[in-house]
Length: 196
Ligand SMILES: Nc1nc2c(ncn2[C@@H]2O[C@H](COP(=O)(O)OP(=O)(O)O)[C@@H](O)[C@H]2O)c(=O)[nH]1
Ligand SMILES: [Mg+2]
Image (cartoon, rainbow, N blue to C red; front, side, top):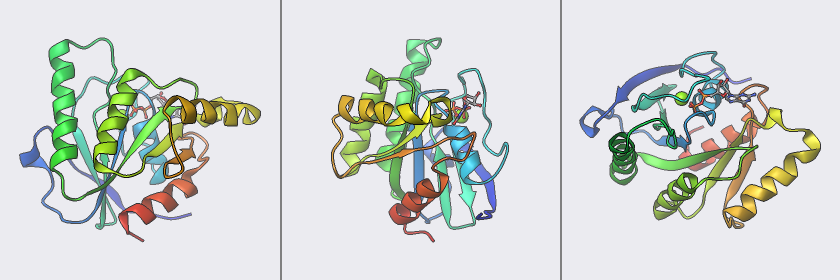
């Protein structure tokens, strides 16, 4: 088991607050409640570094977690939460868009999708933003512990075909509960960020 030093650098709401560090970053994007914070915690072996909630969150901040002083995990605001105003949704979208389009340190944005659900229009929009910057998609399929093992490949196929994924794309089933897929996730993160 790898031990990592990790701490919250900043919860940013504007680019002026982004850390001045030059080391690589990997961002985590996905619907509110999809399991972003839980996955970040599991990757770092921490119970509650990233705040998790059973209720879809309302806070729109970009959270930068410093990992071992050489990598940032970037927890992007969750989208798709119905009970927020149109104005607020626009503000969230602008925050994510600004980060994705301005951040030179960003090496890769991972999209998180719930294993039990078909991708939404918001997920498709997010994926298209990611594809503007990357030649591949890295998709962490979350909450796989909630699915019978025998059904997992069906759910993965559903995601694969409904998003028209290809050979260059990477689909990694994970669980923030059981730790399923965490080693595979780290391997992908290391390869894509160049951080050992
Ligand atoms: N069973 C299970 N529950 C999960 C998993 N990941 C997240 N959850 C639960 O889903 C809810 C939302 O998780 P959270 O990490 O806060 O989602 P976020 O809004 O994307 O950051 C919480 O109640 C978590 O305990 C998982 O892999 N398995
Ligand atoms: Mg969260």
